[in-house]
Image (cartoon, rainbow, N blue to C red; front, side):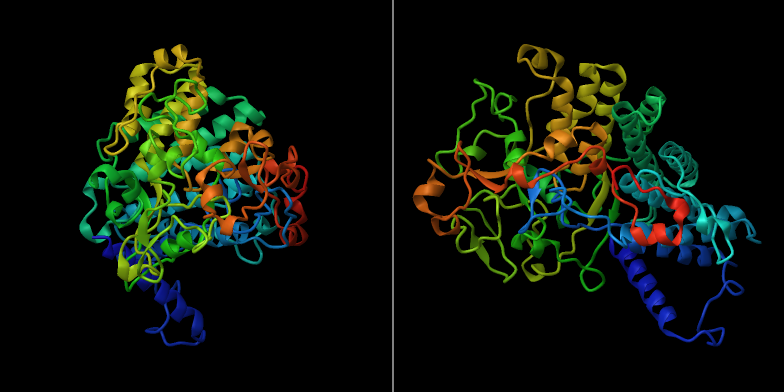
Length: 553
């Protein structure tokens, strides 16, 4: 089914390439301009198609955070980066905004029945909100653009709007879009992959939670409760719509297989970047294998709870098996651990198309931490260098996590009833089936409910690009990001006796025997500077009204 939207993307990209290569004096049949276009429903659909061509795919996941380490140090992650002259995360978004604004503007003079194009206008509103969100998530205070600019437009030299104003604009825009977007269940086969009402509401919940928690912990606005109410309302509307559910069709491996081809078009996927062989592919499976997407750190590994007790492994009665043997730490743990981190000795598909055991890391030492990512590693032999699985940009599990977190942040408490509708639904996924989180359990074991809610979010969404933003909005990055990045336990374990890591030369090891891949002395997080990303210097030079730059920059 996913071939429809991927074919759409291929066609759109081809149109863009052709139009970009030909001369401006083409005959009317060869080039579409405004005098020929915007006349039919089909025209608006074609214009909306272009908006899908720049949505994110998997990047170098989480290496700018504390739960992943690439083959080399990441200068954002360790706090040593400088303000760049240019940044596609800034400039590309304004191109996307222009394309969305063009559709919305042209719809105002459409001569046909407005009802026949309102879905595509709503898609444009969704993408206008989405691209403002992508800007605001990174740069906080950004311009708000709602019109197509030309060389005479005063907005070219406009200022950045306060973060709160950008947040309010995005939230209102998504509510407007949701009213005109179709429900997932009404999408016809040819339109599968297009944005839906559920996508708009789920994104609204995400943005509202970001705005509320940034306000609560950074203090940029005072209306925290109403923002949390917006997050709760939007998430609850998605939850009760009965349009979405967790993916369980792959049995015991449902969590891991959600992220490869098995999970494409599943009810858990709310908004995805879609791929198909011979139309659009990506190299994620290969780059996970080679370590280019990052390797899990000790901090992430330690977050996974005991399977039998539901306790952190630091608890005396957790049932943690320790580190003596290479695979001991994977025993009796949350099954998502072994579906996210590759257990040494597991056979998997290598880029060469063969199955390779990874117990001997000296043969394939593409990890600095000693851990290897298993999540996102594809299994189709013919496609070991051409991954075709969709990238889920918004999924149902995130919505449930938003609902739980927003409820606790608003009330300072969360009922077992809400936990059973959110976190415990995730924990009961087939193949995970962890003990439920309850207030009695938290109290009896001296745990902190907010810590457990955040733990659940981190492990469920690991390597999906949320971690650094989460640490920033919680205002815990100054503590977490400045810590050493550690890997496997080496001293006193089979790793040392069998010499399977880098031929017995592991590098720096701390007093507890754990691998140190980046010491605390090489990691910095300056407050408030590193809570923000800098506006590119060339943009400030071209438009001084964008200044001053973000705090500390």
